[in-house]
Amino acid sequence: MKNRLRELRELKNLTQEDIANRVGVSRQTIISLEKGKYNPSILLAFKLARIFGLPVEEIFIHQEESED
Amino acid sequence: MNVDKYIRKQIIGYSTMTLIGIIALLIGFVFKYQTHTMSGIAFGFIPAGLGCLLILLYSKRRPSLHQNIIAECDERSIYIRNMSGAKAFWITYWWIFALTMLTNIINITVNQICIATLIFMGVIYFTIFFRNLVRF
Image (cartoon, rainbow over all chains, first blue to last red; front, side, top):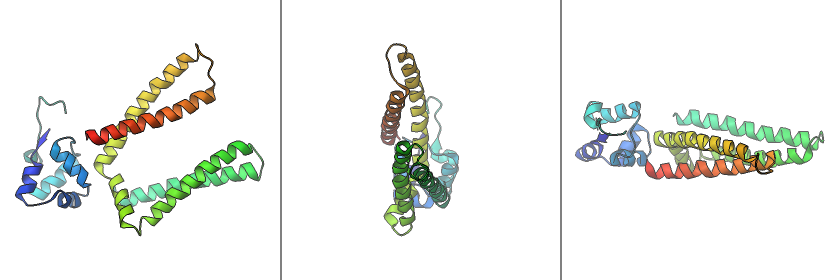
């Protein structure tokens, strides 16, 4: 699964720490999400979507051919 | 996971651990039943239980310690722990199966199997845990 987290975060001039604090996870989780190493839970995906004011599917892009 | 709920659960767990140690100590030294075994349980459970309990209580006053607890409740940490636990379970399952087969060939006691399994489980769990920490 791909995501636009880094791009959107930079657009809003937010740090990884800011996002982490707002959604209640560690900064390491945000780093892993941005690198595409870790896929978030539905709850976390919705919390992130709310920060950016976008639907979840506009932040997290599911790819059919991906094994994830 | 809610941090306060997590701390409450941990406190109950470590208090139980300490209590088991104290009960073992009483059984061993007051009732003189299996003194050697009971002292082993007591000296293992009491310091570990009390130590972790004190760390938890002390963490309320130390922000750096509290941050570690928050990190333990982190979604990714829980995912890594669960995944490592599940993998370690199945690897240990096959390890016990292999050891059971091996007992037909070599002479090995239950005690030796248990000690080897305890060491093996720990090594496997932490190896997978640290591998996943890098992976995710």
